[in-house]
Length: 425
Image: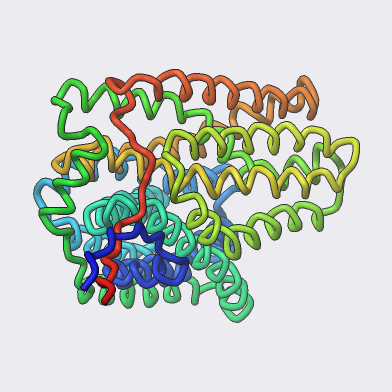
């Protein structure tokens, strides 16, 4: 009998990585369904105008804006809450809270109550996000984590594509159906998550994870340095990627003077690529380090957003630009929570994921306030080039800190797991 052959490295195929998502299947179903049930928020302004006669446009804008305030508070407070309530239960409470709050909103006429309830709605809505990221970080082994985060993003985007369609149908039937649609969807989502068995990884996985990523050699001070340094160098990403959802339609229709069809085409290209390409793209990039992936994503973002300005000369360039920055989006957004989970000790994961989601929401608040006056003052090309310059600063800063193990952590090129090979005869 010949000697046993050396174990051969095995890179999981796309189907194997998808099958490996089974431990978080309930979480993915919850995320997709709950986002599909967000039917009141896209029509919230017009719902208030229709159902609450007498409210001015300014007042409606103030009420709707309270949603973002509540979401920001949730991101900051999620860690403290998770220290007192088991994470999965806290997420279920958040989902159930949304269902109850939107039904109370449907029955409320007092303006101050509408504002308070809208903030509570945003709080419960956002509370689920850092917990979902934390559960993925706990359950999935490090080699599959980035792929799992891309699956969560796919579930989010799938739901956000379905939700507005359902909302439009319900609104045409009766605006009063919108709160009920959201409430029913969130009750079902809460039930699915409550029943889901999301089990933490084994102790062996945890040991391997801390050794491979460098968390094991970090103390409380170094944990903070790594996290806040990463938050600082990725701020340009959150500011830039807040722009498409907040100002793209205004930019295309009012600044460039183009038809609304071009604005719709930007959203369509982005959604199509995310839904069809992101999973396969992140599977293909699993062999790359987080540093390399993030720098590639930054580079795509720079090119894509600079091209948005040149859409003022050739409108079709807007679609090319959208395709390029969407590739960057599909790369950086799974990598960022992956890196945060790698540099964060278990006791701080919910807190840090909460700050991460709050960081994103802060970008959504600030980006349009900065960009719209800017584009009016210096024009499209200069404005989008400035966005590219801010992103370039982030790329250079990321490249600099990622060369320091003290600040970035110890990162090795991911390697496929060895697979035993039967001995020959």
